Image (cartoon, rainbow, N blue to C red; front, side, top):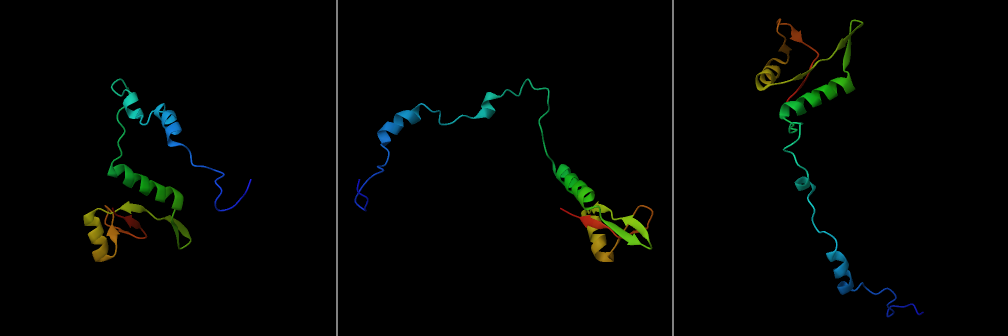
Length: 112
């Protein structure tokens, strides 16, 4: 066997031979059409923006666990969702207040 630029030791496959083998294989099969959903007892699964926001806040709260030392006392830093009114107040005054009127510092606020 001679090696060189003009020798063809590995010829390309014959397209006529491969055509019959490919026709036996189904080209498209959608499994969504094979499953019946009208007899399910489960409701349809939906993910809303509230679910995404809650997951992000819970993940930040459980994995980061932000804490601050204040006069020898460990204070947990709250993670708060900032709606537009709360976000504007935070930008304008540099802090936000809780329901009793106390300033919430330190705090982490997120917004969408």
